[in-house]
Image (cartoon, rainbow, N blue to C red; front, side, top):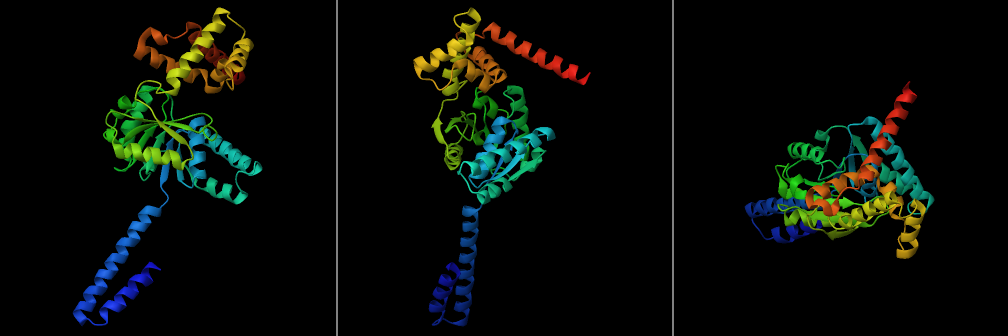
Length: 324
């Protein structure tokens, strides 16, 4: 339609012009048409999302991105973890069909938008890269240094960290203005919230694009300050930590502590059940960050640390006994 419209304009204007003027008019019309087509292609092309880490959070982000008609590159150096992630994704898409949330055709199209890669260089053309790796400052530092080298200049680099300062993470990058926090919540397909956390050097454009992406993914974004834990975990983690202390002191049984908060405060689940759901190792990492930043106000319950160590020892013993 646009081509025919420009053609009609050209025909009307050239009918009274000389041959030279006609040629100039034709050349100008073609340049306008080419420029408009390039602009339309840029506006309507499907952006690609790179996701580093195919664990529970990375897999969930991949799912909602693909369902939102975005092309997804899911990266993990662990081939077994990637395979596990894809099987879980197949299950999630199938559940959408069973629950009437999507048609079989829509689920197949969404699933086809997810591709797996094994090297950071494979994310070189991604428009937006979201990191969902281990909650370890050193791991994230190394990752963002590498991402700065392989990602295209205009790409946004986001971290799904739940407790680490975005400004510190951005300091590892050669493009701190393009680094921002996007903290999703578990399970990602269900939880509606995303915390958007700009660092000191994060540009306004980067912040706006992060908000736009969150909304495109069907989430409700809120703006949080760049302090450890941001808004939600700054309040939630000490609550869970105190519940573990209460259990350690014998203030109540596990069942009664959870029941007390559920029935007395109308919580959907008790703090100890929530601790298991989030992951004790994840909570432990967050508390250590809080303690290092804020001091004894967020002290680590010693029982918590010992419990984690015992769980890992049990896991190692079971693993080696099964091998033997």
